[in-house]
Length: 363
Image (cartoon, rainbow, N blue to C red):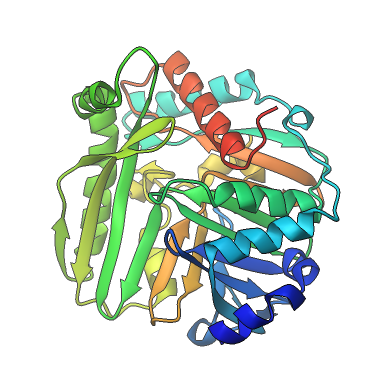
């Protein structure tokens, strides 16, 4: 299949792929691509499963073509050749800035619940949006730019029926192969500034009481969930290095799982990295916080069936998404008792900026 694709690369229907398709960068050398139209499927025979953040169930789809394993160089060149004949429609200036008032209101609601000891942590979000929708050339250029992102990020995309999502997430919900489930706690953020070296910034992050507290809330929650599967191992907490941001990362592994991807999603989504701690309080109340009601797939599970029998479920963050209603970029931050409004407002702006940079929208 791979050799057939390579030999037919010049005849590949890029227009069809950009109308309905998906891709996942595997590593520095290869990617997987799927070309639609996608059909509704069952979990036992799926290509890609997805759910909106607040959805209660996963939608399973099957692609008629793929996954095809391609070299990253050939994939990028094919996209570039397509773009030469197309016109872009979107620039960063088309996007409105996020609402400070909405963010401050959400922050205060969450802090009120924390002060009343109803919750320990929750995650407000902001949105930068435009009513314009991307053309195929925009999608292609965003993918080309995303392919340059560090290998620590999972570069991905999925689009159909005039709606889609493209991004580079640092976070997975789980990787499953056989009875082994791997996941992570990714929470606690520091912006890398010019006033310090990356080593100095990492040491500061590892000693920041607020960020460590936020991170441990997520670690303890996920570990408790995984203990229902089997024996759990967890790594030492370390710093995940990204171009403009650093995050606290702890990896967790459970062995002996008999759960399906859908069951794992129900078990783990959403972790307190994007939802609420403790989980028993629930997270549906967050819908009432603006702009949560329009987040759709942002932060939701996006699971790929890989050729080696593995299921890879991404946490769909650090992305741009579009629909007939327009195009949006979201960012969030974890709020705990120690959180300060100005610091969190600064963090969400830095995350928005990193997303725009990742897709090549810088002016």
